[in-house]
Amino acid sequence: MSENPFSFDGRIRRTEYCLSYIGYYVIQFTLQYLLIDVEMGVLILAACFIPLVWFSLAQGAKRCHDIGNSGWFQLIPLYFLWMMFAPGHPGRNKYGPSPKQPT
Figure 1 (cartoon, rainbow, N blue to C red):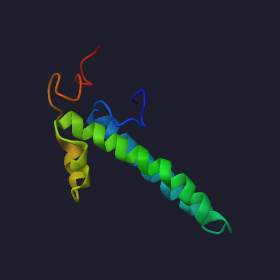
Figure 2 (cartoon, one colour):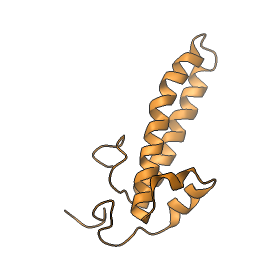
Figure 3 (cartoon, rainbow, N blue to C red):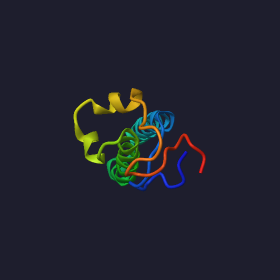
């Protein structure tokens, strides 16, 4: 995993993006299941939801950077599917060095 998963800077590979995406939904569905009957469940879920969304958007932006696009591209419906399968830009681009190449 990247050094700072909540940062919007840098690039990540497909594997890390897919694992982040899966992890996000596992945590979200687990919290929803555990807090469904709790009286304050909605408030707790909302408090947990904000950092989870930030994490998801940050990981998506870094994956967009690896492809060579702005992080705003992740707002396109179903673009996450492209981000899961598209190869990253080889070598360095304007968002930083390739995550495949050792530093």
